[in-house]
Image (cartoon, rainbow, N blue to C red; front, top):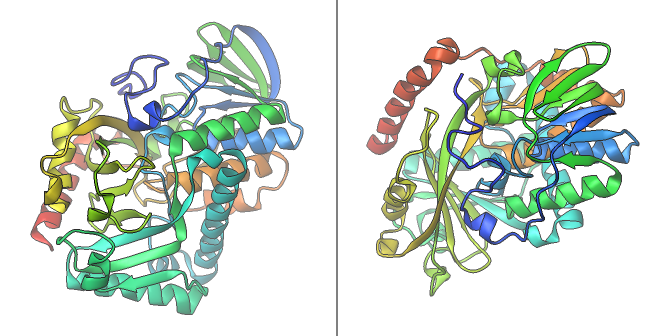
Amino acid sequence: MSDFLHANDTPATYPPSWYTESSPHSQLHPPLKGGISCDVCVIGAGFTGLSTALHLARKGFKVIVLEAHRIGFGASGRNGGQVGSGWNQDQQKLEKQLGHDAAHQLWEMAQAAKTLTRNLAIQFAPDAGYHPGVAEACFNDRDTISSHAKADYLEKNYNYNEIECLNTGSLADVIKSKSYSGGTIDWGAGHLHPLRYAFGLAKAAEAAGATLYEASLVKEVKNGSSNLITTDLGEVKADYVVHATNGYHTNLNRNQAAHVMPINNFLVATEPLEDPREILTKNIAVADNRFVLNYYRLSEDNRLIFGGGESYGTKFPKDIFAKVRRPLTEIFPQLADVNLTHAWGGTLGITTTRLPLFARVGKKQLAAAGYSGHGVAMASFAGQVLAETIAGNASQFDLLSDLPHPAFPGGQTFRSPIMTLAMTWFSLRDRLGI
């Protein structure tokens, strides 16, 4: 299968993003060498793996984390930093698919995920700068009405009253773009600096007793009474294994590979803006309602961090600046001449249902992945769920593992071309407004 781990990046080196530049990261942790034993071996040092390690170490487990590159190297350190409400499915659809009780349980989990993420950020990563407020910006009146109706439904049926509904004028007072018809601001959601958040989780996990190894690519996992995890220079014997690789998975875990598809997403950072209030008048994050969405927020030094565009092959485009500048200037034509100082891509994982995959992939091997754009909160929460499961309470894991996850059509060979065709169609619908 395609090697997303190495196709676009220098080994054990952070990408040239604004997040990297603005994060005082530590020296490279040494790679694993020789043999070691532990209670739990976590593969991957993103939000899922770091949260799992933190929660397990706090419970007294001996935890080893193996990261192929650097802490927060993947999607965890490259994303838009949005801590969103709910799932990548609205609650009414979940009720129809899963039933009333299951949908309400999932909502409560999503609420717990936001609370957990906010609390972890405040306690362990105050420099990540958690702030409340995530807007949904709609391009036409029909979608604005639908967005307001969803907010009303959540208030009436889930007692969630933290969403502010905005018409064309009131949204334009916040987002200085003529592209939108209206939308909402979810004041119960939030945003943060994702790489600093990852570093905070890593430090907290280490302080609790977990051991982290970087530049330690896992080559093989052998299932057994003690699982054997092999890297280039060493091996780990572990009672449990947690696969926390998300979109950067390999054939270590074929269940995940069949149900979680890697896709690439791209961001840019502008130079510091002279008057950021000409773009956003409030310190919120924004995601629009297109299928291939645009998302953005202001940085602490008044840059616009803007994400837009996706690709479904392995390689990033040659000119990420040009790819993202197009949607940026469509939304904010007043930034047509602004300098873009940073451009980067990252690989995330999606599922066919856009609901995350929680799975038992061996007798004592667990996986969580496929957050489908909701990974900041959900991956943090997944780590807590995985830790509770290993500690003996699998109630939340069992509910999540029962979520439907059809495999992608075409298998690993043909699913990318099929997805490209589908996404081209959805992109055309976005442009036509249908």
